[in-house]
Length: 104
Image (cartoon, rainbow, N blue to C red):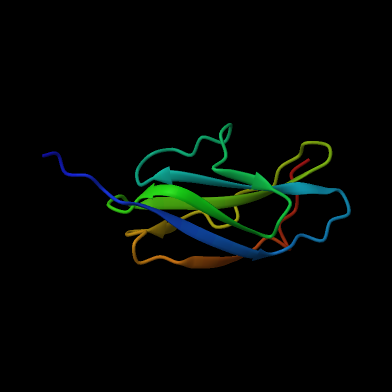
């Protein structure tokens, strides 16, 4: 019988950006030693919190968040290097996007 890994989730919360033209946030995920695919966010929305589902608890993941504005400009990565070795042991993370300036 093949070995299977349980799917799990990771939750994030951050201080909201206060820019008047804020359009939302994007969370990007990747497996360790893989590049981020900035064209394919794991989550996108206006809330200052999110949950990423269906993660393989046997794999280490890295996450970054970005804010974007109404003109489509996007901030730099919030926490490059946020790495989770075992999602089974990870429940949540708080990030601060309030001071990230949108690139123009």
